[in-house]
Length: 497
Image 1 (cartoon, rainbow, N blue to C red):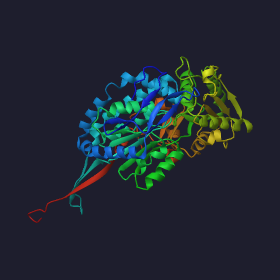
Image 2 (cartoon, one colour):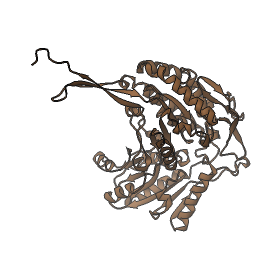
Image 3 (spheres, rainbow, N blue to C red):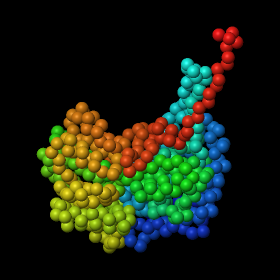
């Protein structure tokens, strides 16, 4: 693992298996999404044999790691995290280049990892909690219900917030007593690999491993009978493939998949600068490439013009450019394919007669020509059947759809395949609780929305096709444990009574 001292030096990362870094027979070339033809670095491309060795290393480390108490594991994990902030600026620069997002967001990506890791360690006292069921009529046993770890787990993260997303599950899995293999995204693996390896180097060999490479060579991370669980964050299609592969060995899965989040803005919503800033960030952070971003805005008809004007005023100030350039507020999309898809959605809406308004100017720097940059867009009062409404855009475009009654807004918000997050915007707390309680999704904000506003202590996950299982909190720890009951037969009363 090279220590890049400046952002123009290509970064090289290897595999980390069983306590040792190693290279592979080939590498992945990591492209810069903002600068066509520029290579950010190279990541080792593991072959099937490397993957098998990573699984074997994690399996060998499991007995010793799981035998420790939760407090002992927490102590080692706390020590392993020390110094992570020392590399944050460097990691952020690398992540910005391989991902495309602005430097500030890349810096926060690593910060959230540290926060989530420490929040997980604070749960150590709850990990080994037990419940005792006393004898009852017809049941002459005292039963202790306890928790035990599963074994080897695989954690697969996406390109958009890979380091932060990793910490929604990895520390919980390790704290529960499992050993782990991390698979960073193949198109943006460099910064994530660096962070994971630094931590793994301070843990017993094999407890934490990291492998990078092509998805086609990684199947054993899901199908191996030695892998007890797979935790995957990504698209619905990716989740379906993971679930199908895991079914062959009945491997358990936690899936945090795509979202089509609805923000429901009621007639009494507070639409001052503070709230409009929150709404804008909820839509356009990371150029719209966050699963829990607002993807559909349902606005009471009486407030539509205010919302459009508020978002338009902020979009007019957007600076579209390279993620590491000072002043840039919106970087490129991660891939040419995603840019083409979002462009298609916008053009389809225009062709259908929707009111489409685009903002900002594309960068003029010759080095950025052909990069995955897009002008953000508002699509006002579109046909609800258009794909810009029904599909997850994952880009800088948002439909704004008016409604007339609260019931109509709720019905429209729920009329989707997705159920990740949602939000209610109202001045009345009772209304917020009533409407929020009717949204079919795993997480609801009130007068806010988005990843930066997530309570990192609370369980997080989706309903419907947005996934299954929960991450974060003690629920996230339990997701990497199984229950075990031990029943003791009550001794017979020697008096015979």
